[in-house]
Length: 356
Image (cartoon, rainbow, N blue to C red):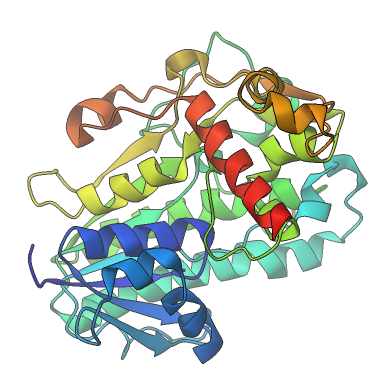
């Protein structure tokens, strides 16, 4: 692996940044796609990158302002041995806090989520094919790609188990989306299905691995304020703990960001068979009880709660969705960090930012 070049998209995001760091730590050279030079500067200024002190050969950046433009990655991926595609639009906090109150019309949801997710994924695969040097592409999908939306909104259940081979049909054009999260889930479904159709039709020389993480929890070095931490899935912990958010209802799948990053990098190992997928989620079949975040906070941050730095008075309900992670654990050798470790990590980082 030493010196092999990995092309990474989404490196300025929560997951993509940790993947970038882990790849460098593993000895790979990294070329990261960023939307603007400012994003590259932000990455270079983080403590993890400062500690690694990578030279221009070990870490370089290429500007890709719009991943949906045809040929966007064609030049950026030249010479790469591997590609990790993390970039994809995610719902913002205001869209996720109460799914039923999202009044954005369906056409705009399609434009924001589904089109970019599909075009970005197919564009990356096509660029990898043109490059001729890529051996494997790792794609960050989502647990939302393999669980029907209807199952989620009906309250889930323990009688149906989902694994990395579970699939959901792509919704037809013209479907009316009721919320940002529904459109996000549909974008992950569509991107996965379109990628697998492309692979079946094109039969490239490289193979592809899809990763299906749950809600990703953990520190984000690119966040500079407590509010920044609420832009992604960290809000599922911080909302009830730090902001007193109530009446939340979330699928019971959580995973530490470091486990997600480790999985991406381990999938570059040629001893890991390609053309398969892995679910990334802690807690086994039982998953995560989100309300436990308040118990953990009360026990591990009792002084901060007493001082009022953490209200710790919110409420969040878990939707039971059994996920089979046995293949991820056996093939990738991952022992998922506990939900308590996830909570302690993000709450500690929140307090650090709040104190600055």
